Image 1 (cartoon, rainbow, N blue to C red):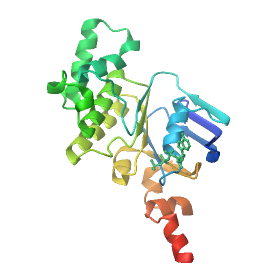
Image 2: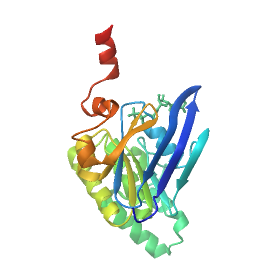
Image 3: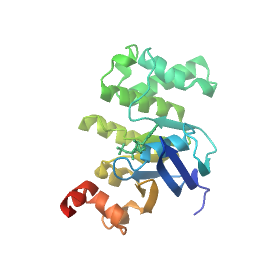
Length: 238
Ligand SMILES: Nc1ncnc2c1ncn2[C@@H]1O[C@H](COP(=O)(O)OP(=O)(O)OP(=O)(O)O)[C@@H](O)[C@H]1O
């Protein structure tokens, strides 16, 4: 591969509440394009994003991220009690823009997600889907090197989902590396060139989505992708 990866996890292990969650997790995320992190509930996808963003520190192993700015859009977005415009402007704090550039970038970001008319409204009163779009606008305005997305369209209607998917694709085309956690496999196929399949805190399979999605090699990836639940086979066996 040409460029250095934007994320490198090497043998990362982490226990939480006395339970092993990540187990010698090792993978690279290339500096270009969209990489999907997929796997069953509880596999450790969100914890992995938090480790990458430095919100959780692994017990062992190495995490290398960057260089550049990272933006993180959570499953449940953290917005401040202020207007939509103020929420975007606040994210631009570290950028040292002129007042005018900042105002223009905020307006463009809100317009990009269809919230321009709502610029002065209290962000915490937005619907779940509107808050998610606002969180994306905040990330877009930052022009990050790396974008971490945790189920960004889980609560969105189809039209808003399309807006978010367009925005993510546009950011990727503009050079942002994206790591996307999603259970929407259609979305993964549409957006991501590569996928990493997590199971019980380990990367069990990784490679191009066009081969992993239709023909996974490992039983864990196959079970996830075909919707086979571990407790179903347990119940059937007992
Ligand atoms: N702060 C914490 N303390 C204790 N356990 C935690 C903590 N955070 C996460 N866990 C546990 O770690 C495991 C992995 O959680 P995580 O949220 O990463 O799963 P996930 O793969 O993102 O799942 P989902 O698809 O359901 O969102 C879960 O069993 C969860 O209960």
